[in-house]
Image: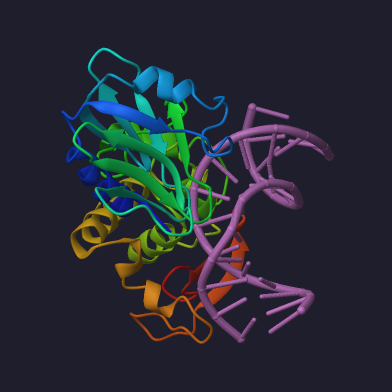
Length: 248
DNA sequence: AGGTCTGTTCAGCT
DNA sequence: TAGCTGAACAGACC
């Protein structure tokens, strides 16, 4: 389940194909490549070269030399495979072939990933690891949604998924149910620091599953701080674990 | 073997 | 319009 750390690893994979000439594109999966008709993405890319790979939150995009940008999203189970053998069961939902035989593929069992030409990121918030203090204060507290739901909204701050959200709230010692417009300026700053620390650690340690709380996100799980049995509920539409004592 | 769960995004509803 | 619900995907797991 890719979150920001996994998306960053994917971006680093895309760095490996910069400069290569695109000779063919498989955009035949009409669901992953929606709203494009088969052949549309290919027509936009063939003959060009990728020149830079970018990421904001979980959204990836690749610049080309004068052609349109290619947007990529890993969905829930996707990854970027560079110069790997084609997968035996057709899990390559989108692929680009380069001159000389190299290949870049969006490998995604679930088909929840996306490939799109000229992606629009106007509705995507600033990257969770980069967002500044003033901007975070301004954006985050504009709604009374529960903290958990607000963290998951990629239009507010981009890159926090379900596991990372629980980790952030545990670090910040805040209840996932608390209304977001209830936080003081000091608490908003503390929440932002928890986001940046959790994201930074997750990137360093290799993924969103590496947090302190994550091993306890199971039946019978306990708070890593005070050993209290964790609460479990659906908040913001997602399974949420938290400590009822230290996250009051 | 069938039912439930998984997570993200988006459409559609109130 | 803010906020919630369910659809979409298809495999993992019990």
